[in-house]
Image (cartoon, rainbow, N blue to C red; front, top):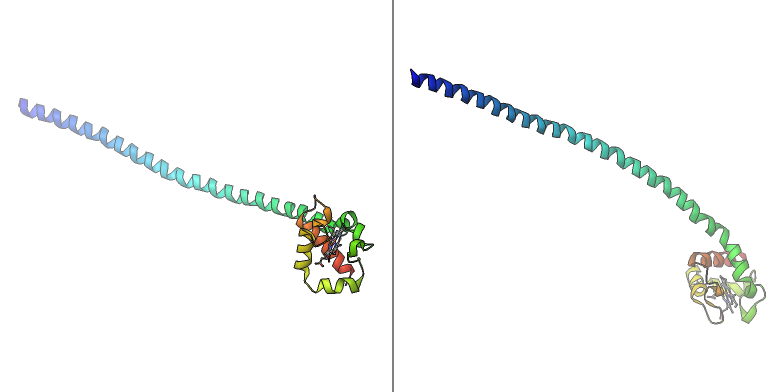
Length: 152
Ligand code: HEC
């Protein structure tokens, strides 16, 4: 009888143990479930943030392009007036005069790229960038286009 009582006790404690163990096992399952449920939440946040970042970037782009368009629109004539007309209105050192089609025709046949390159790097008595240190390559290109358009 003692053995039966003992085995009943052991069985009872074993089943208790199994219950507890089973519960903790079940708990870990629910934790995993929670983690799984959290995952898509995290993904939703990332998905929400990305378009926001893209929107911010796309908002910036037009602002930048507007800012970079402004000086190139202004420059052509202004760059010429500030840095080129000194020589190119009077023909200093045989510089081709603005509006003189005869003088410009053979130069224009070189193509715009060559003319701009000569204006940026310098060409004989023509100083690099017409001596304008501040001018960007774009500024000079705009001035050359202005000069060529006025001299065709
Ligand atoms: C110090 C006088 C001087 C200034 C300032 C000057 N130029 Fe000239 N430029 C010349 C002379 C001289 C030539 C002719 C060079 C030659 O053909 O030997 C010339 C030629 C050119 C040509 C023709 C190049 C070619 O390949 O035929 C261009 C384009 C030109 N200048 C653009 C400019 C621009 C743009 C500016 C202002 C940013 C400028 N120049 C300022 C003196 C000047």
